[in-house]
Image (cartoon, rainbow, N blue to C red):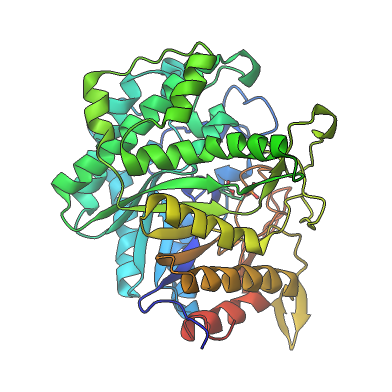
Length: 468
Ligand code: BGP
């Protein structure tokens, strides 16, 4: 008998505020770092907001949330992952009092989810540090951000505590190693940022994350707090033991974040890395106490695996290796070079479960592709069999992992509705089950059209995965 997904499995979709909401200067919102990133991760941030930044309007979820949530409900979503824009609640980030208007918007979103019986899964910080905190404090390099984040969490937990059970502290917290501005609000250019400052910033985020867990336990009994990690299963490029060790060391970049969140202290291999690189962090006795507030579950994104090698001559870089590693010669890739490896998901699930023994939640997975709107039986749609194939293959592997004994809470596919891409800042890299008529030049009617994958996913949810 094939093992199926557990009863009550949380099927749904995932988004982030800056990629869907738009209304970047409405409702009392302050600027976030995304408002000066019109080109995604590739270019230097602009001085101020510029009209070509598609995130200014995004897919206008700020005004269309009711319509969009109704579509998610029609697909049968049990859970919807979204982020709260920090700069809607604290426009500058360092104020004393939260914005009533900002809180009211998310309260309306929660009303709508409750109406449809959809469980919210809230990311507290998803690549959208208030710009003022980046510019005035140099982002997370500054210890003061722990206090600002804690105040922000208190406001959320006090207002939404009874309504939101599942919380994620920082989106893809390990990505700060590669993307210090997007992930850590650190404006210092990457090549000028010292390892010392980078790891001190990481330390502040880790303490803030642990303090959020502590606060959640105090203010919201019954709530569950998870960390969120960018999963990057790392294989040795060849069976040469030197490549195996190289892969092990690269994998530790991601493991470290889960280890600290799950074990409450720094792992030995990271302390060694600090010693070897002359990094001496300021870690107070209180920090050590705080870090002991471990998470209830581990969530992660999964898009690709990578290879690693010790041989400098083989250290090629594929277009998809934005987080490091070298391409795997056995795998095909998406149009953006992200290598497609469904079995890697089973590997990651088994690995994380064995390592941390905490329930796991796949909170991002999906295929970015160029979609073409066509007419079928008089209705506009996208025939996205490639996306169905991708998702089906990954879910089959998730089911294998469940059969392996992994405790899996749920699956939220990334960009369940088309949204602005994080890396390219464009619309044309689409992930959704729902097509949004908006183009890279900002034109388009904003109409929503269900794609073929919409009906496919609805069936997957209705059958709890038996249709895969
Ligand atoms: C993750 C981010 C998301 C999302 C996704 C897809 O790293 O958490 O915000 O955008 O990747 O990436 P992209 O939009 O660059 O294709």
